Length: 389
Image 1 (tube, one colour):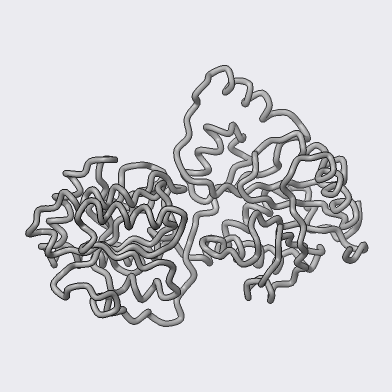
Image 2 (spheres, helix red, strand yellow; image 1 turned 30 degrees about the vertical axis):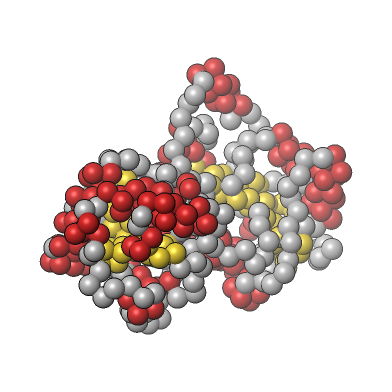
């Protein structure tokens, strides 16, 4: 398909090329890896469907091809094997795939020497069955069917990979999520004018996929429990779309708080919207330790409210860069909202400290961790040798 003179580093996308959302971060990883390794290898990125390529991918030194690496039928596996052999694939970089699978043994039979998986899946895990855990530990030591390296989106995910997936510590690495630098400071949007919100109200914002997993129902219940006097002082602005958006709108109406809620849908001016808000609230049932949205709230200088779920609150220092509440404790949050709404000094202090803390989560550092992890995993220098095996 492409040059047969070079070995290939294969980057595998799970979604079509124009999906967007948080895939911009993975796109930056693919581009960085292509930049780092294209001098030694052919770099190919596969999408299950290609519509419009993101600009960063279009400019990167890689080939993009439409090919679906999902599916377990005999025909699909045969097509995958043909692809790997024809393109001399020696290393594969997957996202959110298992840390061991019998299919990896087939890939290795086709010439693959290095398999790396990056875990961005959210939430807590536990050992529901001791016997299965013991079996998993045994399987995780078997040759051929296990990955060579596992990357976690945060330190929380790295620990989860070791404790739950049974990846050995020397094969598990953290590549902490980070934000790209801003060329200019976004101008705060006038949210009151933009969304016809009464000027006396403080604005609590959340940016996320409109999915029940993100905890929007909890925010609505908190607003319902606010006193009438407090409710006149606050407004909830949700930015994002998704499968449950209509349900949230209906819930706000049923609770009698529709006048205190605005569902803005998907927007392209999120940084400006965040700069114009007063408080951020992110009650998600699970993230990867923290989310990109949480980092964006911090960078915008917003005091943040998050649950004490360790998969969500990893970037928040209670009382310093935000506030952490016991999961599900509506009355705790109501008291916290009342305090933040009425205390301008506290709100500004926590917001300023959050903005400073956000400086530690930058994309340049993230990319450095990514390359260091790849170089450590590739101890045999497979990606540094352009000669065919």
